[in-house]
Image (cartoon, rainbow, N blue to C red; front, side, top):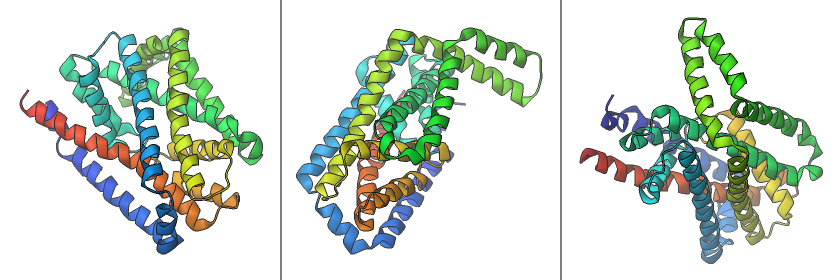
Length: 318
């Protein structure tokens, strides 16, 4: 399959469909909360504060890209930073696919730089694992004020421990590989592909790289949590920073575990519910949630679409 074909057809239909469905969902949420009240709450944020919030989010993207470069270097693919940045941002175009699986599109773009698919998938898996770790860490900051979520956090910690165990213990992955070699069929073949990804992910998770990647992840996602706090503060909502971080992290975890495109619906529902339970007015809770998602999720999708079109043009001339 050629790279140009990978850019056409169903990938664009998925992107356009997810954007349209999500836009309709956000419109429905706003109307349900009372459009005039929601609009008034968003207006209170103002252009100056809004620009600062966007700056925070963009800085977070930069930190996540730096982590991506660390993973590519670990896999022995030291790409120049500008082409690599364009490829990284282009992957955001399909963030609204279930589990952000559409970001695997970077693997297609990286083939031009002789990066095997298994290596790009290993970098992507390492990213998701690092994101998961960062969200759990942020959630722990405010867990004492929300003990009812303890069971979910424990479940996330168990899943996280399993993921870290798989990438840090080559012997365990080798045992899975030997078990898959003894059988035929689609599942053993899939298992062998997964084992290859896990095997290559090991080089991304040496102790030194794990510490550095974790710090970058916590800082990057912490900036988005801080943006959420700034939005709430601009709206006059009395929510402590630790609570804002907890609400943001738990909502993102709920969205990820739902496997809805970009966590749409589930993340927003959890965020609004937690804000309302903290005595934030419903229109303000909806407005804060919609505003945050516009400057995080949809800003990423918009940037990704721009860079993806640029990549498509370069592929045509390639």
